[in-house]
Image 1 (cartoon, rainbow, N blue to C red):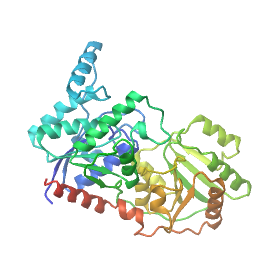
Image 2 (cartoon, rainbow, N blue to C red):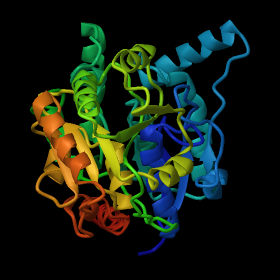
Image 3 (spheres, rainbow, N blue to C red):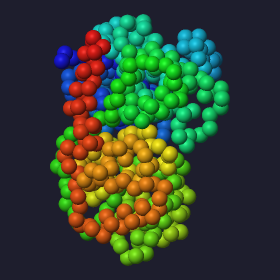
Image 4 (spheres, rainbow, N blue to C red):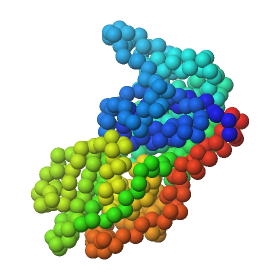
Length: 406
């Protein structure tokens, strides 16, 4: 396929590393490695694992742009706000940044026209901006829906009726206007179609988060006691009480293990760990850069997925694609119905426990720890890796480009 020139608009991208930014960066890197000409327009983020360029993303640093949306005075802020409202017609976060991003995007397009625009969440504003530019330039726009909006997010913070109506209006308009809408899972797409997108139709495609081909040796040597790792923050959205009770019971039976957490952990969780006497079993580490984190994960016997106790797991967690790429056994504490269970249940080397059932969690973890150092590794053709394999994801996107007559 010929090289496609892509404008990639998002509010999540390196050097600001967090889950959505890493999903986007891996996709851009893979598209560029395949020979496509990708230019990224993004904005800074605050709650991140890292915020400076690393070797993993350095090769495409020159094609990532951060339009300056700072204001010299409150009058300039007010003027940009009014101008943004007049242009984008809605009082949403991003309108001031959008003004600068649009100037930059138009300049890039004038230098050499783009073939397609790809817009990515977590914010809806990239969809608004991309669709406006697509209409002006007469190029197709692919809108990606990685997450539920705040008003339809399970266990999310309560949203005012006014904001809920605004999010629904923008979502419906973007969904209907896009040349194609992509979702990482069928369950998330169906959730949108039952809620904010009910009653309207538009082309959709399921494209899971992309994995990667490790450029280092995959180490599967077991030594000493069983070591389990979780990469990611542990905040209020995840109830860890059942896991901690299970770990305490296992520890009191005299079974040795280490559970390592890499990420931001709230003080109340640290207090619980101490109160339960699990300081030697549960080790907390600071967040690491993406590349460093991937290399550290290779030191562990099992990688753990922790999900909130949703009635249905509609999200495809970004770490699923990373874990799959490493070929390590995965332990998932997940809803009894959901995306993670769809991928892992019944597969060799993958263990799924109902995250609302303490007895099931304890029995499952006890069995894994008792059997160590015997470990079942995932098959190379397991469902998860088959779906996130970079070759398959890139083939899917190139088929999409063909269908859109790019």
